[in-house]
Length: 630
Image (cartoon, rainbow, N blue to C red; front, top):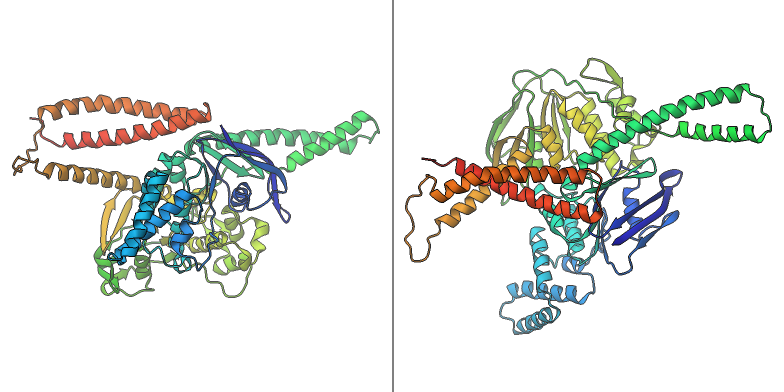
């Protein structure tokens, strides 16, 4: 069933073409991601589909009986409206009845003895019964609790950027909608929140269209990718690895085709220069064909990324030592007795919920904050490169190229060669003509990228990066990953981008809150698997520790396999093998580009079921294998 059709859509801003004559459709149940470089019209396309902007040409056709919920990058909430009125602003009877019920619950916590409130609550419960709204209310309860939205009567204008994002997401997800449109939904969220939303959207029976640069998030949810490039749109019916493979094939084919056209163009150019301009229809036709060839030759063909790697300054034996570090704000402990000695070439990631002290830890290392106790000692050869969330401070309104040349005219690469500042900027997406743009005219994302490039080009030997992936497109992220993967100095990164962390770091500091920091050797996926295993074992032990009614509690638990556990263990290996084969088969189907949208939906749902079952059985196999077989 077709939900959305985009027909021959075109849009320009000034002289800049965003996209031209693009056409695509969305079927019921499809979960589709749009990816493109920054500034190529992703958000504009979503705004047009949502009816907020108008295209230059073309049309958007939506099925008449469907409802849409849209999360833009920037909300337009009225600052003085309460959080609860913002989230429940729809006038549908079910939503209004749930809003009234939730309001009564909150007010009764403060005024439990109020007879008037109890009568109001009784009316709200009757409305909920009449509208059969309880299932929907439980869904809303899950969303509100996960987003940590508590003081719902405060004005929306008093919230932080992260809190506003959560309120906007809650409002979007709460709406009982057919088509969900999300623009960068993971921005300002911590990893735990992103993982919950991943699971929620995977399970949700909804048609989804979203823009995201979070590749792990994209890969878990979507099996259909649309890419905007050079004003055109390309579709890849598969997951992110399939997209990478097929895009590489497309670029190779386009390059070969472009070389053929170029060769033919040179031959035709020779004919045009040497042949008399006869007024025959045959000659006119050939000249017209030549003009078309000329246009095709001048068409840009994307090249495969060329990589180069910066050379950090020499690093001595003593790097950075942290001894018994404490830091607190009033009533909020962030670090407690933390010690660590960094080693050469170490690449560490920092993860944890928002507000647990990740950015504060970096500021302590850089000396912009003083610890309450403890000591931080840097080696004499240390040259820090610090990319903070505060942004780049520029005195006066200068051009990009002038700002960069104030730092360095050339950058030394790992190979020992030097490249110019302008070439370095061009590699990371600041085209040569754009380098003469004034700093104040850059977008927020472009300013962050320039800040990061200046940090890198100083050739530091200890890089500290605080959320370096925010607002960057996937192309920039891939180039940054390649540079950091080959970086020879020390690296300390705070990021919620799991794909990025998995590729770059091999060691994690996990900020658990209340000053507790775990030291985990491995990447984020390793940590998540270990955390899930520990959680499941803990729950199982709690369950086993509860005494059965009428039976005394067992004082000693044997570590020997029971007969039934032996049988279970013997059956797990073949079961795991079958699931691994099914998982591989499903992945191959999803990446094949074959199958209808319904097939892709079914394969995706089954893939998630198999993956969950496989994790469960693997963890159980590990648990049983640690017991005594005799």
